[in-house]
Length: 113
Length: 111
Image (cartoon, one colour):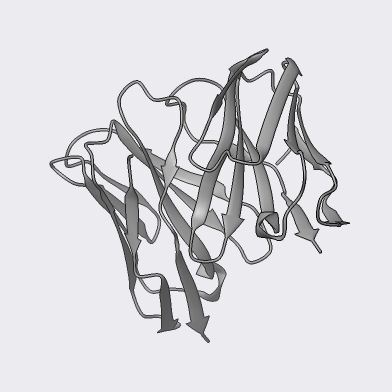
């Protein structure tokens, strides 16, 4: 969807290396979210942000950290990648709590070898 | 924690047949949303239901929210090949700033 981009789209990295995924929005939405998608698990929330420098953990936050220094950017960092973090990562934005739907980015396919 | 269960996990139908996916929550929801994800794509918002017992229609798609606001369903009448994809429900509880997604139902269609 227009207004939200994720980078990179694909990445292969080695176990133990740090990895940062970027989510950029041009909608000036307050809320931003990072999800991972794995077969049989649907979409699971990793971390979310409700404003600049305001973040909180989701249900699968272990091994991940986030930062939001600007409204438009939400970074997800894997401090030391593991094979269990091989997944498709989606960023999403919403204008407000309970707003009419999240807008998702196109996703980042991360493979940890 | 809050859980949203969705069944079935997979559904294969002949084109023209109907399709239904069900969503159940362990807690009362303030609203429920439905998303569609095409193969290789990202989830796209379809609709939000807020009121107890609410029913909404979008062409061949009918969405329902249960009276207790703990369950929901999506029904597609006379499926078409363009309906292929994974359908997710997602619920939020009062005061929460995040959605909890069901596992999704993957729909495949035999033309």
